[in-house]
Image 1: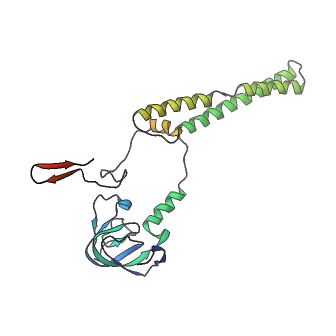
Image 2: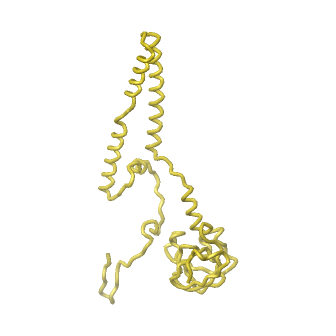
Length: 228
């Protein structure tokens, strides 16, 4: 019994019921071996594994029948395998690496606010330059006076109440969702959720709790206990 950090490719591991698999490995012996790998593939029931060397390896499919994966566990049976990947070279490691490289995109609301900000800035800049030139060449103001007036107009054109208005609108959306028993962590997610047209989920329920529980216990032919 050793820690998974001490495993290296080429090591032989012996598997028994209840063991946690510490590395990706290829089976060379399997006796009715079933592996619980819902955390990786979403399978709702343990998967039967085989030592058939003709089966596809983990480099092709996550559901390879002769390969076991780090982070999964042995549900039943026994077997022996040779380690082929550890750490970031495992399937879990590859997923973790992709997660780290994922860049956070702006929400639809943030994109629209950016467009509005750019549009207002351009219009304000054009008007301010126009007023500055008019003040100097047509109204006879000095450069300093004309500049101060142009800057004052530019500051007045900034929609200072817009952030507060948007925050209030999003807060009201959060309250409405809370009444529907939906908790939102970020205010910007409210508008993003409102723009959603398709929600993809799995049929097994493993995206939610990844667990099964007893709901009824039958005692004989005429008695039963309901479990909540």
